[in-house]
Image 1: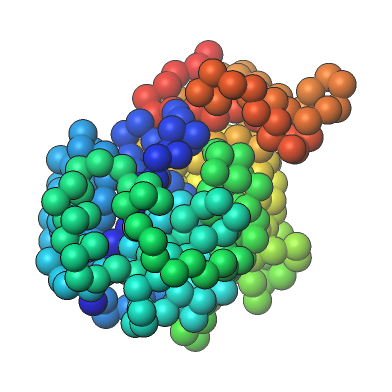
Image 2 (image 1 turned 30 degrees about the vertical axis):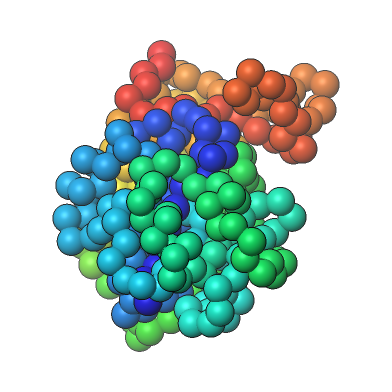
Length: 331
């Protein structure tokens, strides 16, 4: 049996973040969607399905994995936009009869074997649709899928807590890095500081409302204020005087200052200077220049509406900021 993460025909709804990456490499909480799904099926080979132009990138990133290739006679296909809630493998077991799992009109997963799997193998460069899974028996399941970028933002807090619990469940010691005298850790029992991380004097880490995970080699400069739930990636620098509010997930090798709230920042992105950003999603290699301010609230306090593939879509949320693709610069 093999597990394959696939991209559906609705991937375009996640522009501009999905131009250089498959849907399952987007982050929600601490980990990517891919990592959350993979850990539900340990010791099973996981292959990846993606748009053809992304294949070279994935082969370089995952040289030991199969890309758009199935070798086994049985395969469990899982939508790469799945956002697991609880133990995914209990809801969608690895073994069993051929079956299609759906939530409303969205394909969540499909277990396939035999001739039907051979047909998919022969046309695997295309995006998968319901027609590829034929007349399989259907089981309805309550599993979230990411439809739009704001779904990643809105679920970031709950996913950060789940990821924190998973990543720290076997750790006996939570404070492995250097915490200087004069730094304040509130709710210390829910703060993990990895090896090589440094918390300097005057910094305040407040985990009274949710956990804080500081990854390897991260530096928290003096007089910065950090509120959980929060994730700071490896080798990331939080600048002096920064205000990092709850619901923020910052990837590795970033530099972040000013005010940040309810935002996902992917690796290698800098927002070093004063300025506000909230309820936002930033790709990689983005540079937010000095005094850039990005509002997350309309003047009339109504729902934020956005053009998606030429159509206006109501996000259903009052707070929603910017969604910035990779390599963008602002000033």
